[in-house]
Length: 464
Image 1 (cartoon, helix red, strand yellow):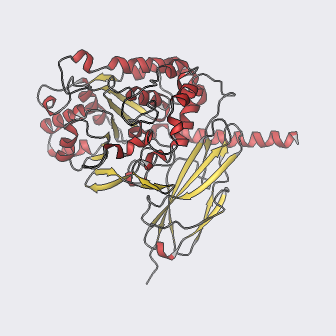
Image 2: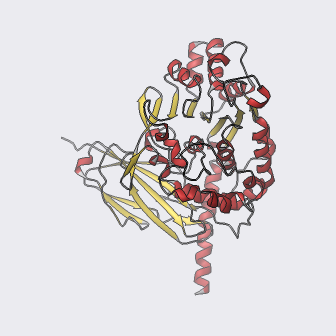
Image 3: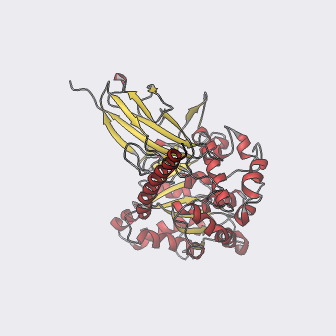
């Protein structure tokens, strides 16, 4: 019995090592990320940045730009707050080595500190044009100009002024073809339009890939999908008690900086808000989402194509509730458990903490979306039997259809949907449509952590 258990653990470890090696080989494919944050206003920017630091291994963070808190530049020394970014990055530096024991790829604190910049001292179009270049706008230009096949992802947490200035500068100084090449290398996810530069960018550069995470005109602003971080779903996971227990208390200097009081009314707990977090969740590469397909959905929400490069909030139906916020809160249990575990990594040994399982489809050990061409009536085999857990924890499996993500509006039954070997029969009504199958592999650790994979089934039209 003992020998069998020992061999089983060795086999699991060997599988996990293979997966880790494969994932490290893809490190050069990390998404590039620049954050524009009006930190120093609503404390939720500090909250979002602290969570981002625990995911610093998942991105190439190329810029952390402190943007203006308000439209006025009367007190520029207090309207732009790079020192608050530096404070959080410094706290990250104190726990970086501990984080790196749990997962490879965490950058050195000196690298992150060197990428902090100040933006315009006031927001809005009055701060765009000749004489308004900033450290932030110059960093954006230099990042996009750098020879790299990966796009530059920009998460806007406040004003878009420095991005607008960068685009204005390129349009002024370069040819039309050079301008087009420049903005085609950008992807933007903006949390609302927080000044008038956002609408200007969308109007002037309609082909720019731009996700506008914002309620529709005339709607209650609380309907914006990003507010699903704290409104709707299981709201106990956003409470002060939850934050004190799992984030701020006894979790090291990074957790100690996490604000426990935020603005916005109503907020059922007035604690966790993190309204900006969905902007970088959207780019997070963990097997669930694809930032080139905002309509597919993920932790950062799901969006509908409005034309050219613009995407706006879409709605999901979860537990008989249909809302835009549901596209974010439906994942809350998983992303809060993820945050809890990563904060544990700041203070716990590898033996004491839990780590994510790996979801493997057939022999595919990447995080890539799997695209399959299938036929009507076909019985499609769903195999994740090679999935493993680094801690040797027992795994739970869940296969489910994400109807809003596909073009087929039905939900075909998945047989044995809670096992590692499931099947789905493609219905005749799905001909010419796509079906999105989501796999969740969850371990039995504390907290339970989930790994994802997505399979897109493109159903062929029967030959006439």
